[in-house]
Image (cartoon, rainbow, N blue to C red; front, top):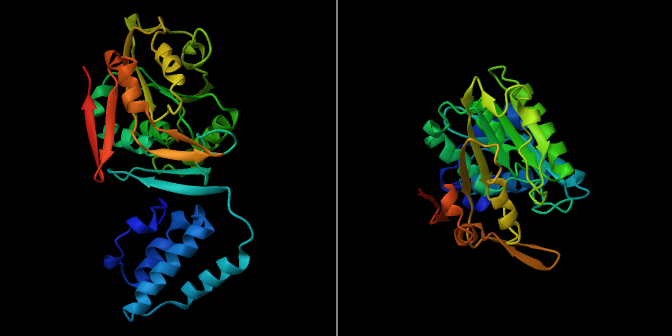
Length: 307
């Protein structure tokens, strides 16, 4: 409910009683503070109501009142919503993001599945971040992966980058949002947000933003840098520019990871764009840079590490 999982993917045969859903889900503290979009609430409650009615279960009057209130108050489609993503070890990230895949001439204002998959991979492979000085994310979007890594404390510094000012503004807001909600009091002080355009020549990692005194070496030793990117290439023309980010000569130790999906499409203004990052990256010899590629099929994630 809080993650806005499509209703068709919910197992309605195990739906709890109305009292449990109303008190523990619909009125969960996070749902009160960061409510799902009205349309999602409406569809969820109507679906649940039909199930409870068919099973002869007692239904709270509040359910009918909430449905009536949403219907009577609906005017136009909501442009923004809150989504909460839950992970193992009681980790959760709440983001404000666009309800549209393409908004403000960018795809970066909503979370894509690649970021979720990368979070899962990083959680399973935390050893790769051992003694990591800096993590840089390319195409951070609204910040799921960057904030997740911040909560994992994987590096001394994290630099989240994107090229759209709209995206960077929303990214800053989501960092502030999660700083307020973190139970451990973590304020994401080691996160930096910076504009980075892969089409710039040359593409330079902004060390002055990260550590102006000690870059590119820390304490007299070469630093360990990890660059992350997840599902951030739709246009084949950008693959070459993305590869150039890896040619930053200031980097001493570099690991470049990517997760992309093959075959997924979305339409915008009559055109169809395919997420072709998986095979495009192979064709541009990204395997030489140590990219992590993943495909999804049958509801499961398949990982492949090129060495």
